[in-house]
Structure formats: C-alpha cells, structure tokens
Amino acid sequence: MTHAARPAGAACAMLAITLLGAFGCGDGSDGTLGPPEPPLEPSFGTIQVLTQTATETPEAILDPDGFTVAVDSLTPRPIELNGTVTFSNVAAGNHIVALDGLQVNCTTPENPASVMVAADTPTRVTFPVTCWAPTTGRIAFSASLRGVWEIYTINPDGTDLRRVTTVAELGPRPPVHIWPAWSPDGWKIAYTHLYNDKGNQDIFVVNADGTGATQLTTASGRDNYPAWSPDGSKIAFSSDRDDLDNLNIYLMNADGTDQVRLTEGSHYERPTWSPDGSKILFSGGPLGWDIYMMNPDGTSQVRLTDPRPFGEAWLSGPNVCSPDGSRILFTSAPEESWDAYVMNADGTGWARLTDWEGSEEPAAWSPEGSRILFTSTKTNLIHTMNADGTGVRTVTHGVGGRTVYPDWSHGTRGRRFPPRIPDSSEPRDTRNFARPVAERHPAAHRHSNALPDGADALTALACLPANDARVRFETPQPHEAFFLLLLRVSCDKMSNSAP
Image (cartoon, rainbow, N blue to C red):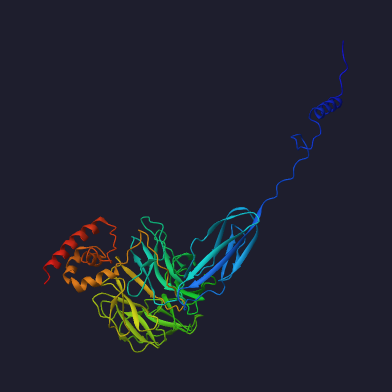
C-alpha cells in the first residue's frame, strides 16, 4: 500500500506545532523561551585631572601657556598650571592619563598615571609639578668619556657633570656629537652630528636635559658650527652643501625651516652673533684666516682684522662677543702655537691672553663678562680665566677624558635641573676629590703620571680617610681599582711619616 507524498511546507508546519506544544509559550521567567533581553548598557564614569604647580624659589619662571593632558589616545586638552579638567563618559576600567608640555626645568612624579574608573563615580588624578629656579652659567662641551664623543654640561666649578646626548650606534666608526651652542634662554643646545661612516654632518637641537633631540638640517655635505641669534629665532651655521670646496655661512629659523645662504666664494665658517643681533661675525676669507662682520641678511661684509697686528685670526666659539658688545675673543697664531686673544669690536686693540706651551682657543664669555672660557691642547681640558688672562681655573679637572668645544650659557631663563643619580655608564663627578689632596698630601700627585685619564681624582680618593663622606667613587675598570689600592697604601705611608 502506497501513500501520497506530503508537501514540504505542510511537514514544516506540523514540526512547528509539535515544538510549540512541547515548550509552551512562556515569558522566559521559568526557563522557557521568550523575547530576547536587551543588550547591557556600558558603564561610564568621569576622570578629573588636577595640576598643582609649585616653585622651588620665587625666581622660578613658569610657562604661561600651561600644559596639556590626555586620557589614553583621546585628543589632549589644555590645562592651566594650577587647574582642573574633567573627562566625562569614560568607560569603566583601567585608563592612562598623561600630562605633557612641561618645561625642561619642571618635573612631576608618576607621569603618565594609571587609573581605574568605576561606573557613575568620579576618579581624581593629581599631578604635582615642581619647577626649579632659573640660573645662568652652565657650560656645555663635547667629550669622549664613554669611548664616543657626546655633549655634556657642567657647572663652572666642575660639579654636577651631566650627559646630554647619547650616541647609540657604537660600531667601529660611531657618530660624533660636537660644537654645542646654548640657546639664548638656556633651554636648548644646538650641536653638530657627524656621521663617520658617511662623512656628512648635520645640525641637531636637544633640550638641555637631554630630551627631544631633533634634526634640523638634512642636506648632503657638512652642516656645522651652529650659533643662535640673541632672540632665539634664528641659527647661523656653516655648510658646504652648495660648494664642496668651501664652507659658507647659512641662516635658518630655529626649527630648521627657511635655510638660506649668506656668503659666496671663499671659505667662511664659525659664525657668531653680536649681542644685539644686528651683526653676524665669521672667519675665513680669500687671504687666509681673518674675521669678518656682516648684516644678518649677508650684506655689508667688513673685514675686521685688516691689518693684522700679528698672524692669522679666527673665531673659536659660538659666544665670543662680550655681553656688552665691546670686545671679541679670537685665536691667533703669530708663532708656532695658537693663543687666545681679545680685541675691540672694531678690530683694533689686540691683546694676548695666553702664552702656554700648547694651543689655546677662547670659546665664550661668562654671563656677566668677567671671565673667559677656553680650551688648551696642553691639558686637553676646559679652563676659565679673568678677562685680562689672569686667575686661570680648571673646569673639567677630574672628568676623565679629553674635553673640547665649550660654550657658556647666558640664558636668563636657563635651568637648574633636579638632582638625580647617574646611571652606571655615565662618568662620575670627581671634582671635589682633588682639592683636599693637593693641600694635605702634595706628594700623592707624583703617582698620577702612571695613571690613565682622571688619575688625579683617583689619587685624591686614595688619600681621603676611609670614613670620609666624600668617598663615593666607583671604579669601573679593574686597572683603576689596582692603582687605587697602590695609592692608598702610598698615602697611608705618607700620613704615618708626616710630622
């Protein structure tokens, strides 16, 4: 017996009726099927950010523009030095709050901050900001203290040594950072980055605390000897980008834009500015080394060293004009060695300041114009002297390497940085060790000839009592520890034999 096939639709209908009969039409409260529940609404809260800015001294200068603050990747919002900003509709959960726009002399702990936001609950984040008092007089220079040439800063008395730039490519021919130049406000340092593997040189600028290194020039060739205009808006520099046989003077904005050539033809380099910004001085020329002066647009070029009372003359630093604009420092070589000289702003009145066995190059005046910063090949160190050449003092004594190309900050808004402990790769400040030894144990310095760079500091440490609070030196090299042991024995003998 056969049966006719049922239509497919009828079969589906019967199945639906069967299922409904089995489960019923409940509302879901007893576990039976019912209408789907609406999706859960996300939970939101708010983040309230507060800034509390304080100064170490009343003289501290603050940025009137304030800061910016951002939550996660949201658009940053401005916030006053002592202000409040509220971020609403922030999803519950963990978030990152970051404060930005701090000056190089200001710090805040725990920035960025991690916060947990609860639903319908305000979460408060407070950034206590501390800014330090302005100061002038810090010295920038180039030194090879880690086997590579980098930019450092130091106080004029040789204390508080700090590395500003870091050479990361430590290959067989690492880059070189040289010729630092302070910005007028003391916040930034321009310098030359020399690519040893390519031969190119470019100008970079970095914050005085070592952050924010930025490349300003990218042309092929050599861009070097940067010098800031007194108002900080321009940087003059030397370059051979358009004439590989000769350096010439160029000018650009402080951010690296609008680079223009100011001189033509002969070799010209090492620009510097008059204190009022009306003139650019530079060295070179068709007759050898002379000193010239021109307007900032390149017009009205005048040769200052005409005639030369002695030999050739050239500028050897970015800050060689005295603060009052009346005198100019330069280097001349009337004999076999180079010596430091000073002359009037019109090129007259040459006066010799040094007469050492080596060569000396004056680089900058102190902020008040009473002292002169210079280098010497006799010592491979940086020194200062009175404006008449007397009263020589050593700045980089005990740093532990060759120190060159210094510049002295004149910035009325220059910064004193907060104390911090250097990492193990940085040179130790050993300046305070040497002076007590020279007074108490002069014979100890007889041993320094057998030591590497910085030996005077090792000698000094060796002669300090073991419980002396100044004994904080950590010898990074085994041979230094060996010499230190020998010197301590020697100093102990001297102390025992002293009357």
